Image (cartoon, rainbow, N blue to C red):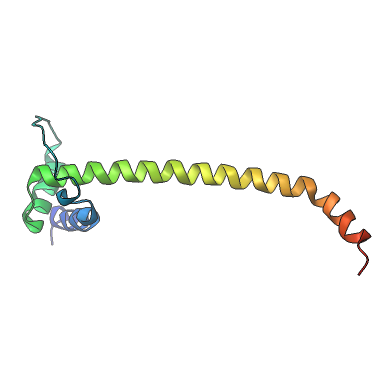
Length: 104
């Protein structure tokens, strides 16, 4: 199996959930230039999946946008987790005193 074929299969599998049926609205034409090796992978993925080259590129862009949004959310959650940990550590001595003063 050639490297191009292997990469095309990986691309096809990665993009399956982002297919064109998610956005059946209008489409616009655009002319772009791609590196030849990348275009070969896209064409092979399109041929294997039965989709057009445009559909493969659109799915790739959808996935990239969703990945970026997920990364942004993950970073916000991580920042919030750090802040929550800082607050918990700040109140640890107060909590320890309250627990020590409790009568069981």
